[in-house]
Image (cartoon, rainbow, N blue to C red; front, side):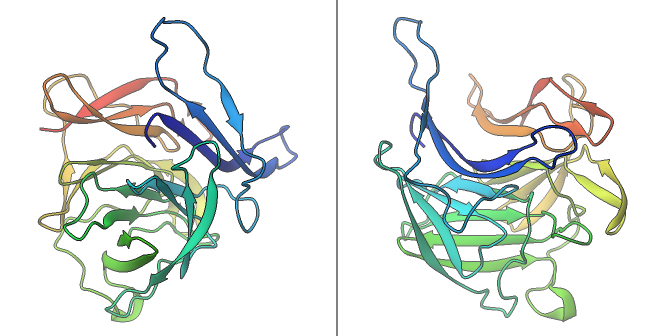
Length: 280
């Protein structure tokens, strides 16, 4: 948010076999470049503003563009967590009420390891549009649903985009193709939509080992449709993985891109490479 990065909760894996510790702490770091080229990155703890409701990991967060960060944990449903960082030295938590999908699909199911991105331009009414995709429930297979969340001031409204909710409620599935279910993928907003890449799934729903994905998808917010992305020249794409990091970038020629770094092919190899997927 601005020149400040925020770290909210997460998981300290601890010593092998002890299960680690789920965290509720809040930290910030000022990323303003030093004009002299020196200095070191400094982290600031905020012990007076722990995560409300207790520790959380595998959650998702996205800036709202007005000095606030929306945080979506497995506990969120009708009430969403908001962190006001307009004054970086005094961050403050609150919650906002969310209304369910008007078509009867309710709220997104409880999940972790989903992606949450804010589209780069505000709507005409001053609201921010966020897209929630995929993730994993506590038990069972991965999700492939897409939800739109509009936030304006102290209110928010959910809309299930697709596919159709179980039992036929909610909107009809958008036209094919549709990305396969996954969790621990990365996503980044670009003008007009969102890129989703990688992730993992169970080769048998809810059981068996994790399989990494290496496919890339584009959600077009204008047309309301997915399309699979394929490389056209350049270097070969990164190997399939989950749990990578990603960020939207802009090239010197103005092209939008998604920078992807690190990640893990479950129980096989941990990656340390970095690549950029250029769009168009």
